Image (cartoon, rainbow over all chains, first blue to last red):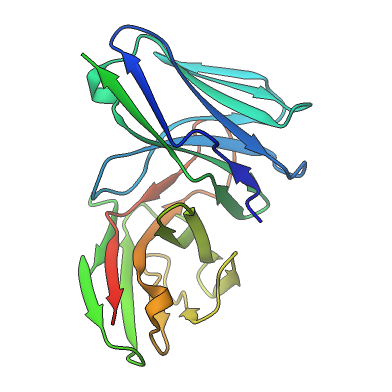
Length: 110
Length: 115
């Protein structure tokens, strides 16, 4: 049973606009959440993370929002750039285990 | 500083064969882990280790063994390969402390096909 879900397999956005990627989770024991970016034939690379004690974390163009009551996580990219085109995975952690979503493929159109 | 390295990059096995996927990191990380990535399934944790001599099972451990004799190395062994183990395998390492910016660093992956 998938504990972390990304229900949108793909997303297309115009360059300069906002990209919003969503993630839902079921396990209330998750205490740390992360977003990774992945290009084809490469390993995932870290983007941004958030602890369960916070509801927002910002790093440059990337902002992660956490809504614990809804068990919902989102990543905002503003402004979106063509180089942001990749697959984005959300992940959640409880103890020493990490659980990943199935990924959303983002295409930023120039 | 090479980060996380994995060998081989590609491997084809026949059903029933055994092999070891190698993983090494040079960042002195305590935590190391193995994932497999399958279409429509995301990354799933196979085994992980929180330090030399300490390993534990993840979500999908069946058919795989691990050991951690040094901080740097964390090999994954397939005991008797099956077609269901055809996948892309990623090794990762990181610190155990979970704070802002803390993460795992992933290797480039090993693409394994079992015929």
